[in-house]
Image (cartoon, rainbow, N blue to C red; front, side, top):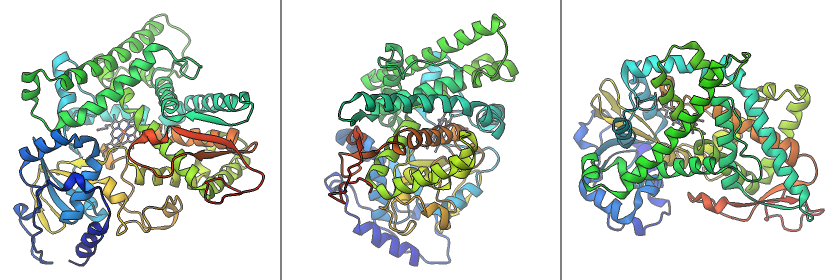
Amino acid sequence: MQAMGSLKQFWRKVALPSALWDNFPVATVPAQTDSKIQPYDAIPSTGNAWINLIRFWRGNHFQQMHQVMLRNFQRFGPIYREKLGTHDSVNVILPEDAAQLFQSEGILPSRMSIEPWRAHRRLRNHKCGVFLLNGEDWRSDRLILNKEVLSPIGVRKFSPFLQEVAADFVTLLHRRIKKNARGTLTVDLYADLFRFTLESSNYVLYGQRLGLLEENPNAEAVAFITAVETMLKTTLPLLYTPHSLLQWTKSKIWQEHIDAWDVIFSHAEKSIQNIYQEFCLGQERKYSGILAELLLQAELSMDSIKANITELMAGGVDTTAIPLLFTLFELARNPHVQTALREEILAAESQVQHDETKILNHVPLLKGAIKETLRLYPVGITVTRHPQKDVVLHNYHVPAGTLVQVALYPMGRSPEIFKTPDRYDPERWLKDNNNFKALAFGFGSRQCIGRRIAEVEMMLFLIHSFHTILSRGPYLLKTQSSSPTSNTKNLQQSKLLPKPARLKNPTCGLAA
Ligand code: HEM
């Protein structure tokens, strides 16, 4: 087929680290006819699942899964079967295939199970929250949670909390800049942004400030952040390995995973206890976060509230910190985008007389910037579904129940799908046809429930940054790193620098 042919040519041209791939089995791509639907077994495949798993373990390739997929699309075309240990999935890249898939998801969309997380819940006798539930159990919890977490009314209630934390964080940075005699500041953004997002999540969920934006954060909060990082890092290798094998071998990585979840759960438990006690004291009632609303409504059991709040807490920290980091990085590399955003935000501010929650409706380019960051650096590299009925994807028959993954990272970087994909261009989201291209938060009734929290948190952070630091005074964002990689550590050293009187080096990343 025409589209498939040109896409394959592109993938072959893309320069990728080849060392990783030299030992991988190459499958052949069967010839396709346009009209006849091909059987499932004809989908090109990566070969033996267990040999692949051994290679992954040996080469520690789990952290490069996005590159693995990119390379596999390059090799096989826009649809292939990824066989890795316990997993056998059909991976697709084209927006039209994503559309087909989501149309067949039904009213109870089912996502890939994260077995190591479920195993922890079984081991500790905890309930599962919406992330891990499926079927009617998922739907009934989700409908209750939607009201407080995702609906416009819920968003209106918690937005002022996010605004307060964003303002505090930016004021803190501004104070640090002013303290420095040279008026410059090297920021450890990686750690700072994690503290910012943890403070925001904690406030929105529990209605309580943790005090992380003070100079010396408390040890418990640092332990929580470390636990979230460990939990995420250990998830991928565990995901593809039979669980019984891990328990049987008492593997170190499995123990680390369990310990990390235990820290995350005990953080939630302590916070829930605190709030519950305040409730029992019968203090004056005003909105004090999502947990308090769930307790008051009493529609979910206490165990379900705990399970869901823990998932929201664990899911809300790195997911938002990393895209913010990449947004600042891209703004530093693209001064013209920095300028355009500054102008948009200042104009919006004067239009709504500094009511930040209203500003959110007047900043389309800022929204585009966040989409653009998530296109290039999606937090979850795939959106997964088990279709409820048989579906035809890219002319192949895919039976109901098959695990299908829409590969976001390769999609975001394909020139067939996005013009000049390497360019950071928020405007593309304002003008092009973007159907089924903005999938970073998933799709439909199963999409990310924390989407609005994340979007509002990121937008308010950027609005306050432009308002306090990047617009007033001569401060500009600059990065010391010239190329983004998946290794976010490269971004740790970004600088807030004074704007030079004259631009000496137009390639250095400072705006005129
Ligand atoms: C930029 C930030 C974020 C991104 C890109 C993101 C992405 C995603 C994606 C792709 C899914 C799967 C959706 C699907 O299957 O269609 C998801 C689900 C979920 N996310 Fe997020 N997320 C983000 C922030 C958050 C935050 C801040 C929270 C919590 C406050 C959160 C909590 C959850 C939960 C609980 C689910 C499971 C929902 C369900 O299955 O019903 N996420 N997220």
